[in-house]
Length: 307
Ligand code: GLN
Image (cartoon, rainbow, N blue to C red):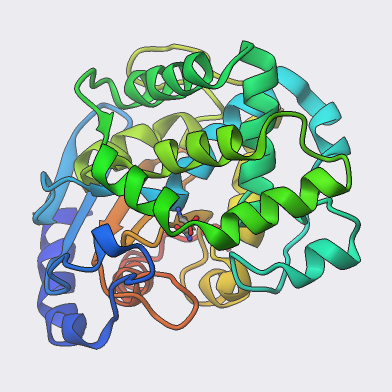
């Protein structure tokens, strides 16, 4: 298939819509990102990349980091992880407090904020401290991306902390239900640090290969997780990766995927490729407006979806 021509067509078709999205202004450090930017990359199992737009530009991966923290927590805790969090779609916005109260402090899944904060808490327990836990999460991201230069933007992390009232509230609520072991501010701080990691679509599409290949990196042969765990992470990405728009994403795109409020989205074509797209303007659900559009065009033009 001529992937390059397809990507070239996609950028032409989506460019008029870049102005329609709205950047995430609730994090002041992200407020000034130019919304009229676009990038899309795919990485094949032999490492070949096809790209269009600003595919080397770094952006805040935000909630895409939840895929990486969930991977590590599932690897270490296996099914015991589900004592703390669920794996059902929430049908609610990513930062909602309401359901968490009704459900006694147990977050629905690892991709809404409460779930990801809880997973971060589990990783702090496993590694024995938030500094070391953050370093290990970063090392994991660097390993799956095969890139040692990836790092976090401290300005964004600090800005999130300064305005993180809702995430602090979620963590406090879980703590009140005895479903958070470490200090609230310590856990939330580490959560913001991994959300503030910066990557490009080239890096992210490469990083998805272990999930497209049953848990093993097809280029380096490193085994990161078991086949059954990769299956479950992909399933949770499909059902929960876009919050209350997860059904819509599955319906229109038809691939396991995860979004972040930095405007990035990752997706997986099982046994074939990792994909990443970036357009900072968001839709009302906090997912990249044009990114979702581009992925929809990609699966329509190529016929590559899991359905
Ligand atoms: N760090 C962001 C937050 O906590 C992540 C949200 C997202 O990307 N959906 O609000």
